Length: 225
Ligand code: ACO
Ligand code: ZN
Image (cartoon, rainbow, N blue to C red; front, side, top):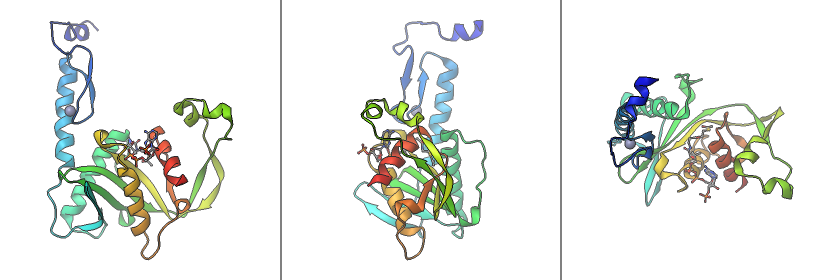
């Protein structure tokens, strides 16, 4: 404990206490050497991981004024699969996922949102599924709408009856500084239009696996439209 305390002595630094990096989004104590070192490491790994140099043969699913969505499929060239795996590892680390392998790699498709600055700022991993368990909507009472979003999230439960589904979204992630710009929504749209050849999946044919609070808020909004 003593050694730890010594690292955070205020020696007149400008930024004492927690700061958020405006590039990688990490919150750390700028006056803490250990924290700063961890930030530098994280920052570099993230930037390296999301850099996209571009491939001759890329599968563009959608194009926008601020970027494009590409998809990597299991039979794609090694370099594409390698990048998809690199990004997945980054996303897993951000989501706090422990297991590093996919349930069914031969059927998994990776969607990536590439910004106009050539950075992968969004990633979605989709796999075929047969059934899913619906998140039960809370009864919409005036009482519940007055609750904080987090309170509402806690009240959600899952149905015990499986329902048929086609596509499971096992991971969805958007770069911290690029959130709330419809990147996740556009990635899910891209999945629905391209996951199954020749059919546009409805919102009830897709399912989000084990969502985080952010994931639930996004999914419930997205699936209503
Ligand atoms: N809080 C409240 N509402 C939200 C949130 C949120 N954090 N995120 C999205 N929404 C709702 C909003 O209504 C939003 O529309 P608005 O911005 O016009 O109000 C709508 O969903 C659409 O949001 P998008 O802009 O399309 O979503 P975004 O690109 O910001 O990405 C995501 C959402 C992927 C959940 C992002 O917040 C993220 O990466 N979070 C950290 C990682 C994470 O938790 N991912 C989900 C894991 S669950 C899983 O992988 C199955
Ligand atoms: Zn940073």
